[in-house]
Amino acid sequence: MADHGDLQAHEQTYAGVMRLLKISTVVCFVVAMFIVFILAN
Image (cartoon, rainbow, N blue to C red):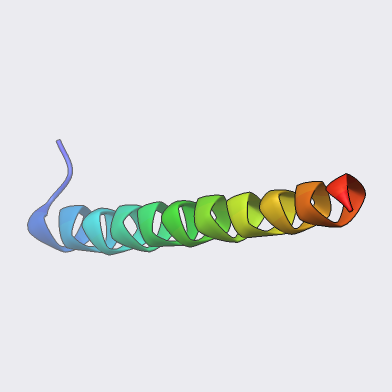
């Protein structure tokens, strides 16, 4: 089983990846809405 140091590093990496995923999702949504707005006009 992983010791405490490895678990803490894993949790930090996981938190970073989840934060990046959330930010990327919002950015992609904003870009998609911008493209839709441009194409609609």
